Image 1 (cartoon, rainbow, N blue to C red):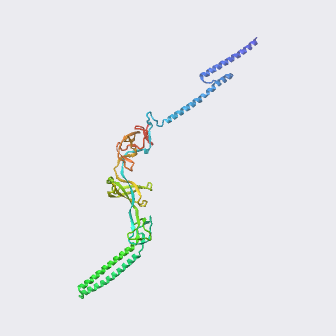
Image 2 (image 1 turned 30 degrees about the horizontal axis):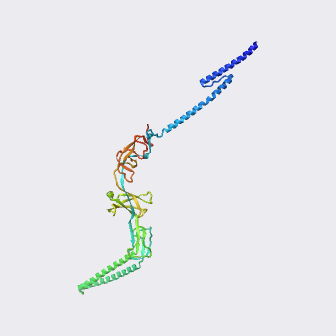
Length: 433
């Protein structure tokens, strides 16, 4: 009985132990649900521990998910902060960001000398030019120059046949010799008759006849010598020489042609000084003065600029117009310019006293009213101004009212920005707030 009781009690104890284990498992699950943590159990509770680990494994992913969400939120915040730096339009469409300018976008209103100029155009012509002609007639034996050839003063241009001229010269030389011999004889007779007159062997009338014959011999000698010199000149003129240093423009005859006196042989020009002939409106003539400078360009020379000075002013208007011709002297030491070239440029009329001025491109027009934008105290300002007539060829315009010396005007367009917006120049302190 005792043994049976022990056997019966053993299962009972085992059941009690299993019941205790189940209770512990329930308690563990309850504790885990409350504390969201996993507790370690004794080794003899292996089944309960495994069950607890199976329950806790899915919950170990939660920290990674939370970390990923935090990173995504940080990236979104960074992009939002980065985008806030760019100017963003407000509710009314205005640009709220500051206007950033470069140094060259800002100009200072200050006194400048503005010169008024007058446009001019015309053709260039050599100041010294001539058509070389033959002074005597004859056959052209030699023509030593061609178009474009430079010659010096005194160089031989052409030679004519000199046989007739040489014969004439020789004849005149013979006439001189005869006249000289006649004079010597008349001189001897004069001296002889003077002695006889003193001795009263001849009358006074006879001596006077001798004196007259002597005077006639003297005159004949002078005439013969003059004719000889003329023949020598004609002989020398048969060799045609350059009257000045220059360039041959045209060759008008050929060797072998027979020419008469005053026949054109070659056209010669001196390109070292040219003359620009330009028509100027009569109303502008009072402002044109001798010595005023002119700047002009000629096609084919690119951006090269030439300079000249007013040399003469025509006293009357040109036929059929109300323009007056002025003549501008242009030095051409390198002979780059040629006669007949067309020039365009400006004549500097007068130089004014320094006046307050700004770049003309800084002046804007709103409803026909000239305005400028200024940079003052880190903000964009708008000023209505009164400007004078812009000088042609100058980038500046005189300001008569609306600005003061030292004001900083903005040259380019300010776009959508308006007066009162923040503005600054790169390299300077940017506006804050």
